[in-house]
Length: 213
Ligand code: GTP
Ligand code: MG
Image 1 (cartoon, protein in one colour):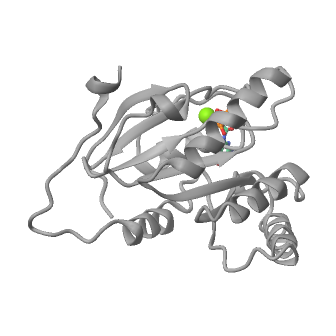
Image 2 (image 1 turned 135 degrees about the horizontal axis):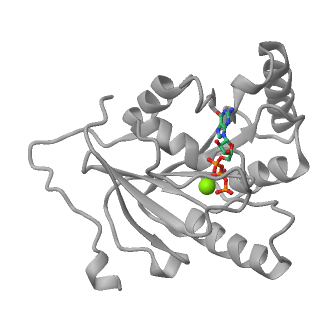
Image 3 (image 1 turned 30 degrees about the horizontal axis):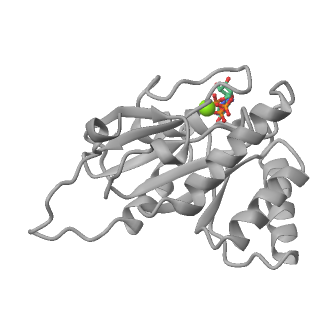
């Protein structure tokens, strides 16, 4: 799929302030610093559309990026960042979980997992929660440029094995590197496959920001 346009449409603090929209949305979740914002930049082929940082906890709001005028990528705050206060983390969790479980035009969630690390309880718990809530999701192993192919494969296989042992089956998986651009094609193809088929009568419905703010 060719990306012809991608632009920032706005940020919201919580689910309630998200704009009404019929545009299909694809959201990115995972631990702080796992590479969510970097992956969005990779997909849209822009350096700095989503703000990234080497310091965990950069993304604090629900951020919408409209692509090709037809669908949206949604960058979410991360979990598991030790320096965020418990109250702040709890607030993030409430807002993110409300968005993930209640947003009607949310088509698919990508759960990002750091391929450098052995499976972490927090990631497995998040996968379990998504599954329990029947939120359709795939797993994306990130930063694969940072470790050997064998390590990445071992960690990925282990994560998928534990997921299966917990009854989470048939989850599609991807791997990516924002540095080498590995994984961009398959992820875009997957998103394309989840978009409604074009009809001649399709009228473009854009985010209704004005009514919400
Ligand atoms: P929060 O917004 O804090 O939750 O983090 P995030 O998940 O959005 O991570 P972000 O994209 O900001 O990336 C965190 C750091 O990892 C940055 O320094 C990125 O440059 C780096 N990074 C992200 N993806 C990759 C990757 O594929 N390879 C390498 N080498 N570095 C990466
Ligand atoms: Mg981020």
